[in-house]
Length: 286
Ligand code: NDP
Picture 1 (cartoon, protein in one colour):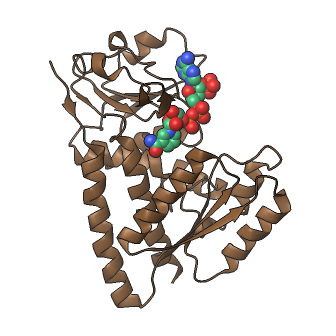
Picture 2 (spheres, rainbow, N blue to C red; picture 1 turned 90 degrees about the vertical axis):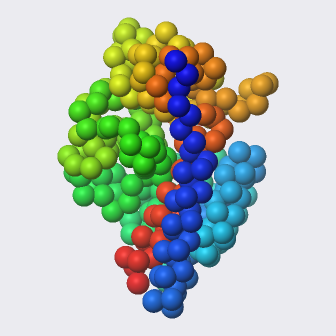
Picture 3 (cartoon, rainbow, N blue to C red; picture 1 turned 135 degrees about the vertical axis):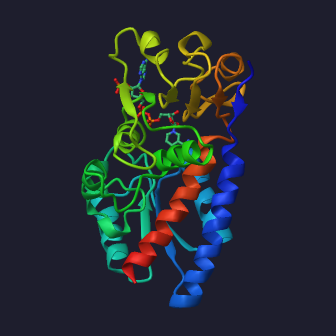
């Protein structure tokens, strides 16, 4: 068996086209251009690349973008003031503070300061709570990208056993909550695994859909995959061989039924869903 490759890059391009059309209709009807403001603290090279990619994607979709940069040494108060200014700025519809933040700044204090109506990353406790209750305002971008990929590739989620490895607040936990909700894109039976899970390979081998969000290069080996399963690789790991996922892709190809590559899988979808949330924020705010 050779797994079907789930081309996240191509799907993201389709979604971005759809959003560009929606943005242009929105601008025509409302006379306002949606705007995303990003805050970047410090000089972390990966964060700089992510923020630049987000800005470029905005530009291509017809969404305005702002970048606010603060020094690595900046204080928590300075960042909180910037967030307050953006909360109050009617020209800003969506905002995000790029993580990770330097050690002197408490991320939870900053994320809770973002106006939930502008919180396009969906990290604010109010938005997390709404998601858990099944009435989300915004869906977090990476989990939403994974869900869109499954839905648009016609992979049956309802009734499937989904095993997610990784329980972070950014990927694993919200994704588990989304896939277990009632209705379209949900109704899965979800198992959420982490570093304390016993007999991990036995659990992953029982997955119809296996999602890896661990942050360890090629951690999921072929023997951890049920033949024919769908494998979604969220991981992005920088190695001497370049960017690789959390799944041993070459070996998994022979076992899985469908699989996302890294790069070109989940990553591009994350940005597409950020654009989606920014347009939604503008629509709700105006
Ligand atoms: P975190 O480091 O926050 O979480 C990693 C999770 O993996 C934790 O829950 C941890 O368990 C679990 N884990 C670690 N080691 C093991 C192990 N040996 N066995 C089982 N579970 C283990 O990572 P993130 O969720 O932020 O990111 C995960 C990956 O996804 C990274 O590679 C990141 O770069 C990538 N990513 C990609 C995005 C994209 O757009 N494609 C967006 C966001 C992240 P425990 O909780 O017990 O410590």
